[in-house]
Image (cartoon, rainbow, N blue to C red; front, side, top):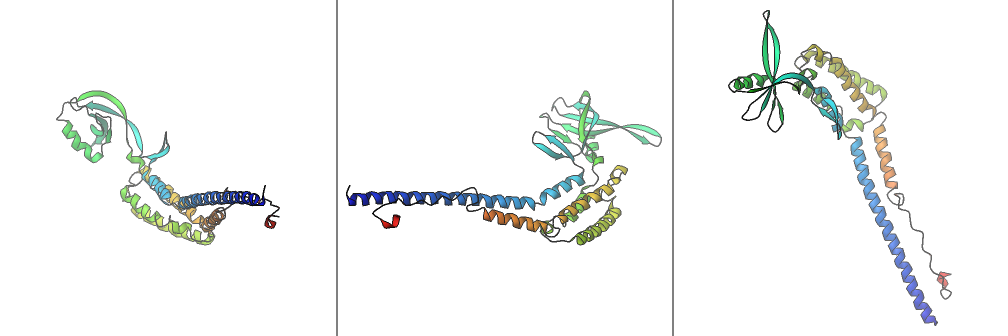
Length: 291
């Protein structure tokens, strides 16, 4: 084989090696960029999750409303407080709508009276509507003009207003207060132990005074609802304390900063995409640069 043939073959081999090097670098950069893009999005989602205040405030609102925690196929969820009562079911034969009427006994001037209260309406498509107390009398007056078929007594699930410790005004006022403490600014601040105790002490005193002066206006008009007075104050204060302790000594700031640094370092080379080893040039006795 002539020297020209050797040079031509060597040139082809060299071009092939360079082409393979370019492919390796392209694959490496592509993988690193993909990994870096995923890490950025993943990091943003994590920080957003860490500083998410909506979920905390949502749980507080459910607690103040007296909502129940129930479990279904998709996991736990909140539902309005309910109870099962025995009611008389009556159906309109024309519309197939069923009305559930509860019979209550009332004491008036030493005499006992039987009072009928409409508690739920079930449409023919099985959808149910809870009837508010203010609407019950109005609907009952209209039902007296219709010939209904009695279906007997049945147990029916209805709203339990007794389990709601606060009315809409009470829930709104306390949520307005909590929204000023459960914030992202609180998590990203830097507080000392003594300062946290001072904030909790001030908030506890002011919260107790506010609720003591307005508990009836806020809907706590029964002994059972009044019994939740201290429990509500404690739960709100403990939630605020948890938020401020995340900012103890700037811990939340340091946590986010550390994760950001780790993510940046893992962007290239550390994200599971190793560097390709350098490709050695093929040895050629006719070319000193390959020796």
